[in-house]
Length: 208
Image (tube, rainbow, N blue to C red; front, side):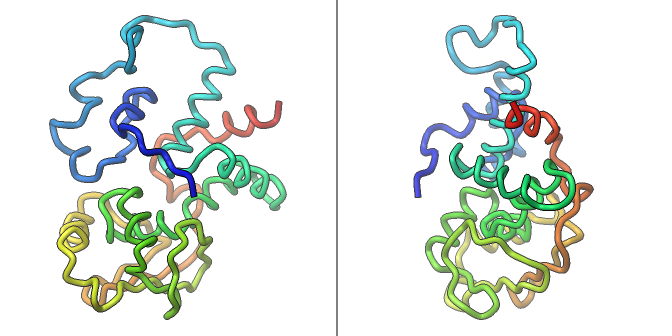
């Protein structure tokens, strides 16, 4: 599966918002957007005019980069969200939130979605007692994620679990920290997504 391998901090600066792509670094003074709060590149400190299309495009790019998916995959999520009953934008965010790697991140087993993706790919977790190493698996209510016994002493996972208090765990998830286990209690609602996302702009962009 293709993935973005370039500099993460550049993406935050381009979207002019902290996307929390580098884990704990994003909470420190080393965060690039705190040091250089303007877009990257030669003309980053200019004042370009932004059209309605540009605003919609930036919102789509922001959400795509938050969840670490490429354009073709993101469009696939949108088409699936559009086929479902309900509000398309909310359906889209629900699909992205229910990705296996995102749930691992939300539960606090990883400090970033990128790290969560790596841990999933390297077979550190089971899903409902079975091997699962595909980051894009869609989880449903009642699913149980558990860290394998041999992986419970990995330093980065322990550090992430200790730091999850600062980030908080969404109400639709439940973490059993002592047993390295998490449960999807119910499907995420729009209120559970705290990031400043205007999903209607994405719907307008793809509806043209």
